Length: 250
Image (cartoon, rainbow, N blue to C red; front, side, top):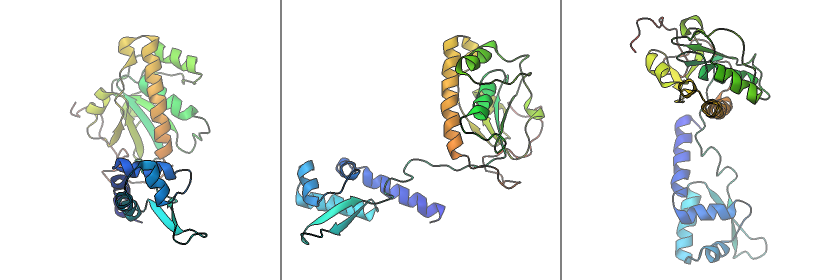
């Protein structure tokens, strides 16, 4: 099934589940099969209405029916094997490296890269992560160092780096602050709008940023398939060869 057909199939299944009665039928069939009569009794609806909803679910590929081996006048409805597969968005990305970017490269981008490189079961040699800033600070924020220590994540030593010294063709760029995202219009990127914990300065703000980044990193990990061939076309989610930051519109 090509991408267009797969999308149409997902849309049809979502449409079938948009009705509360059909959604309840699917709920009831999740753990076992049932006859139309049993479903009708459970839902308290008429035979005609049940027949209508079952036809809609069958048309969308959500359920199947088979005759009873005992009473051939009776049939059983079952949830199709892949009825619920891929209903949630399932983007697929590939990259040689992930680069997290914020303004100062002092907190959010540093924490994101550290989380990526220390995630359980990760092979950082497969798809490593780095971080950079559009206007690097003089040092990594003490709050970032403290939250990393509290959470048992290794935050590499070193000074914040400028994006022009870090980004390379075929990097997957993830901006983790609004200012950096809006300052890099010429770079194809993914954006996570995360509040700056440095502005607040409290442990709570850094904990919140850490938790948000951890959840986003886990989500991206599931979508990233690994290194891809060089020279991705424009319009992909990978950073192309880019001009220096100086001179870009902000």
